[in-house]
Amino acid sequence: MPHTNIDDSAPGIEMIRAEMRQQHVDAVASLNAAARLAGRVAAPIRRTGRLVPIGMGGSHCINRTAEALYRAQGIDTIAITASEQLYQPLSGLEDCTRILVSQSGEPAEIVRMLNKGDGGGEGFGITLDGNSRLGRSLPCLVDLPAPDVMAGLPPACDLGQEDNR
Picture 1 (tube, rainbow, N blue to C red):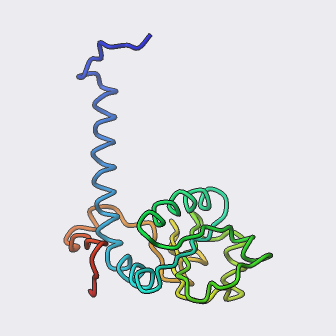
Picture 2 (cartoon, rainbow, N blue to C red):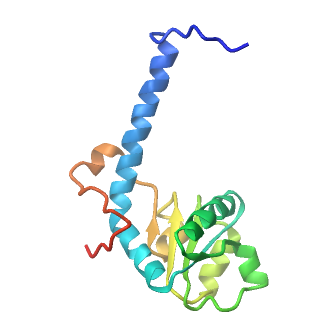
């Protein structure tokens, strides 16, 4: 049976609210810091209308979720695993924008792809470790500094519009 008499002043509730406020600040800082590179990533996707997000494990799962969202926007998207592209590569990706996605930026398959120079088209990355092999090899959206470091950055661009900053 659900508890309906929640004490809004309880310390646990306030701790949750404080965490939610901090997550909001962090999310806004992340969007603001990523705006310039996001415009660079969006340009070739707009130009070709084709995108191939590549990852492994949880990153591939997120790519599959994003795949449907991109398709809903009219972008021809296919999410594949890095191992699939290494061992049974899809052809015809020369004019696709590739985004390699990895939390650590160091899985063996991603590193092998970077070593092989696989693909064609323009390549970008998403990782939480800017010092990883992925973070050093491709222009990447990466983990961002604390919000106080972000102070004074321009607000995020509207990614629905062309951004030539």
